[in-house]
Length: 279
Length: 321
Image (tube, rainbow over all chains, first blue to last red):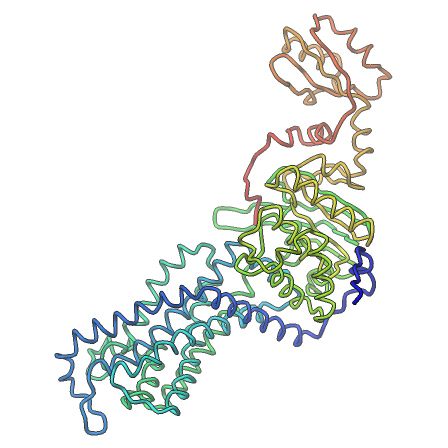
C-alpha cells in the first residue's frame, strides 16, 4: 500500500468555496452531534454514574424501611393487597433520579459557558434552537439511563413488574426526562456562574421533588399543598410511573399525559426564546 | 473581505451605558493580514463578536465576503475560522472528537473531514495524541489543536483573538509559523487582535484601537514614518528642566515626551523642521549624560496616538464580553 502524505495546506484546505447545507439538515446534524457529545461524556464519567446511585438507594432503603411500619397503614390497596411503603416509594425515587440528572443539563450549559466550549458552538452555522434541542435531548438521555439503572433494582423491593410494564416505564421516563431537562436548560441559559446555578437548583429542584408526591400520597393533602403539587410537572410524571409500576394513581392518565406534554412544550419553547435572546 | 462602516456597540445597563466600540470603519482586502492593536478593553474582542454575529451592532454594518453579517449570520460564519482569546475546546473529549464534532457542525462530509483532520493533526504535531483527552494536553498543544479546528472547514477568513496570550515563547513562535504557512499557501485573509507589537509588526496593515475608536491605521512602516524619522532618548541630571525646554522650543512635542527610568526622556524628532537629531541635541543647553537615536516602533506610534503606553496599560482584563 502506498502512503499518501500531502503536506500542503493548499491541497487539503484550498479549492472549492464552502458549501452551506440546507438549514434543516444543518440543524439536525447539529442536534445529533451535541447529543452524541453528551452521551460520550456520560460514558466517560461512569464513576459519577455509579456515585449518583447512592442517594436514591439511601431513600429507598433507609427512608423506605424506616417509614414502612407506620406508612404500611396508609391503606393503599393494590389488587386486594396492601401496598407497602417501599413499593409506593419506588416509582417516586425512580422519578427523582431522572429529575436530578435531568436538572444537570442546566448546569452543563453553564459549565460549557464557563469553560468556553459554548462559544465554539455559538459561532457555528447552527441555529440556537438546535443548540437548545441538542442539550435537551442529551440531558434527557442521561437522565433516562440513570433512572433505568434504579428501575432495574425493582426485585430488591419485592415488586413484580412485567417486561411490557418496564418498557412503558422507560417511555414515561423519557417524558419526565425531556420535561425536566427543559426546566434545567431554561434555568441554565441565562446563568453565567455554576455556583449561582447550584443555589437556584435548591430553590427549584428540591421543591419540585418534595411537591411531586414521590414521598407521600397526593390525596387528602392540605389545600395549599394540593394546589402546589398540581403546578409541579413532576407530580404528573410520578403519578404516571406509579400507575405503571405499582397500579396506584391520583390523576387520570389523560391529565398526566396532557400536563406533561404541555409543561414540556412550554419549558422547551421558553428555553429556546430565552437562549435566542442571550448574547 | 471585511468592510465595517461606522460600527458601534453600546452596552446598556441600569448603571449607565458603556460604549465599547465607538463608530469604527475599516476595510480588509482579500488575502490581507490585518491587525487590531490595542490594550485590553479597547474594544477589539467586541468588534470580533460583531463580526461573527455573536453580538448585534448598536448601529453601523459589517460586510464579510459580500455578505451582511446581521442578515446572513450562518453564511458568514461558514466562511470564518476563529481562534478565541480564551480556551474553547471540550477537554473531556479527545483531540480527534473535537475536530470531528467541529467538522459536523460546519456540515463537512465525513471523507473530507477525516482527510483534513488527519492532515491538520499531522502538521500541528499532535498526531500521536489524537485519541487522548484534551485535558491532558499542554497549553501550547491546546492552542495548536484550536488552530487545526479553526482551519478544518477551510475558512476564507481566519480571526485570531490574542492567539498567543499565555503561551511560552517557544509555543508562540510555532503558532505563528503555522499561521504564516497557511497564509502563504492558501491565501487566507487573517484578522488579528493583539497587544504584542512584534506580532502586529509583521502584518500588512495595522489599526490602532483605543477606547473603542480607531485612532490610526496603515502599514506598520507608514505609521512609523508618519510619526517621525527618529526617536531620541536623552539622559540628563535634570529631566524636568529638559522637559520644560523641549516643550517651550518645540511645541509639537507637547504630550509626546515619555519618561523612561530616572532621568531619561524619550521623544520623536519634531517633524517638518528640517532638523537632524544632532542639531536638536546640540541646541539643548543642559548637560547631557547619554543620548541615543533609533527608529520608531509601533509602541511609539501607539503612544503618539493614544498618549499612553501599550504594555503598561492594564485596564479591565475582561475587555467586554
